[in-house]
Image 1 (tube, rainbow, N blue to C red):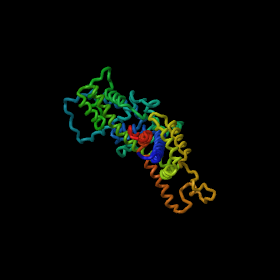
Image 2: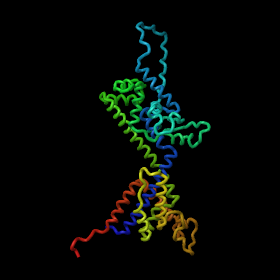
Image 3: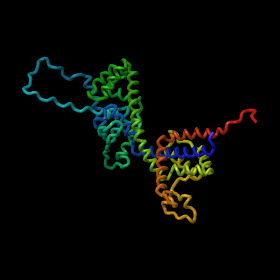
Image 4: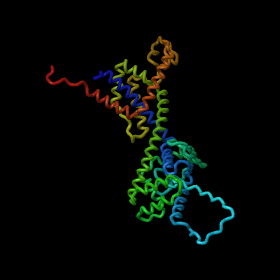
Length: 402
């Protein structure tokens, strides 16, 4: 079994990695809420699912999109207004070009402005958001978004970030399926049948992904409304799993950037911390005692409470002797030491070889930034396992062996 000093060193380093990763995650969540990142990805992912992302979307006209979509479905389900004439009409002297078919209403706007999703997870109606989405430039990337701020509206709520913060960050699969059925069966009265759903789906505008996807789901439903509803929910969930992956990849970039800034501002250097824990057993034991009492923030915990808790844990480790912060290094505390500002911060060395000292500082920062990648859950889980290993102690001697 490893010695207690080695275990204390491992516990101390893992504790620092875990707390730093957790702090970076908390700041990422705060930034994500500030810029409305979750709502933006949900809106973009929903549009890619039902509209394909090739056209622009204006939430200002979402209510009109819902009304026009239902009018279009009703008119197509009712059939042509005038039957074709039995007498052939004379051929025109010159064939005139067929009028261009008007662009179909946005399915995204129609779904979000319906009675089921219109005010879900937001204050007021989604159609009151003055938000426009440009066509998607690539899979997994957010489209360009613009917001029209009305006169007298505060910038914090009327600007782009404010509009995105007011978007729903979650729509359940059940609500989505009900919104789809409400849209394609505009005149449902009581029990909805598969015949009504199929007729409504076939009446949708041609050429949109929403129509072809629903036609496939109708075909596989075997004339069962419950099976169709479940299939729509699974279709939505599968796509939203991919959207969640897109969000996590984008959030990981924010986490790395926030973590790098945090590491440099607080001077959390893996090499100097490891050197202190290895050479000073008193500091190593004290930090290890702080580490085994720490726990990671729970998923439902408030970000502010989590941040305060992590700051308290880091302050306790610093009070135990961990070299965190930009205070004067121990080598420059002696009265006879001749140190400039860089020497006092530990960036240079008063004994020469300052270039290599600076390289070591940068390497220590880089190690800390890389340690953010596995995430706080990984480090705190590993900390729990190593803490239990230390708590077991040495294996007891066999009975009678004296």
